[in-house]
Image (cartoon, rainbow, N blue to C red; front, side, top):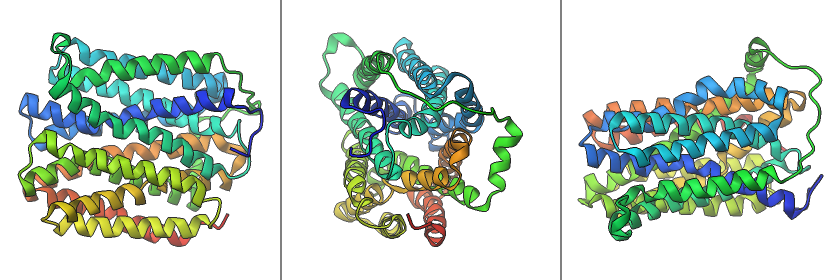
Length: 387
């Protein structure tokens, strides 16, 4: 990256490894499908798992912004990865519904800490086009996301039998990578600007009184709702309409993350060439088209096209919303970061609504819920500020 501050690859690479660790949260999509199959859960019960992961963003994001003011961003990121590694070790102790709920809760808490602290930490190593750099971080995160279904599928079909882990082999693999990330970041020196005044809860939430900050917050809620919704629902659509088994339908999750990864990588370059508002509008058009295809599609290639479109289109929404909010009020980066990450609570609201409606209407009900988020993003496009 050209816009460096205290920077070298020795600093940039450990930070990007933390973004890879951030992607571990997306394993909840394929994992919830396997847990549902193993325990015979209804859709509404299974969707509690991804919802629970993102519930903790509501409780921990703003306090994490305040914690960063006290101990710094780097130490907060390290704490987040430690919690994440613990969450990955718990499923190795069993597979009861209660244990998986606890594990996914810890995964959500760790990710809330990480997303709140890691994104503003990037501003300490780069200057200039923040949204482009955050998008590159999302590209690295997406690599971990789309690998999860493949690792789970490999574990379920070809893992070493003596391990006895099956699809759960992805947990120790990701835990080891998390430990490497802890060591790498611990050995990296990152200079952080001092915080002149610590904010309280009231001061943080007052920032939502700013109309533009509120719009960005709602935009992130819709982004993550579509993200988690597609991650969880895409395999179910293929199983329902095409009669696929879970292992074959799991490719839908990988397809989504492959195109999200491509979108993040290309987006980090495109955002240097065209205005954020223009690229945001193009991305939203892709999401809207994807919702239509997933709602009415009955053939494999129509559904795959819809999943690919939403993967590419949704890949840059978070980075643009986040960067727009931070640039709107740079003096409150930690507090705004906490508020924006609290918006990931949309990952709780959307799957719950999708689960309830899909119990009644099938996969179409889930797509209709995601379509509401797509409509909001289309409206929000008009408010995006030109960089």
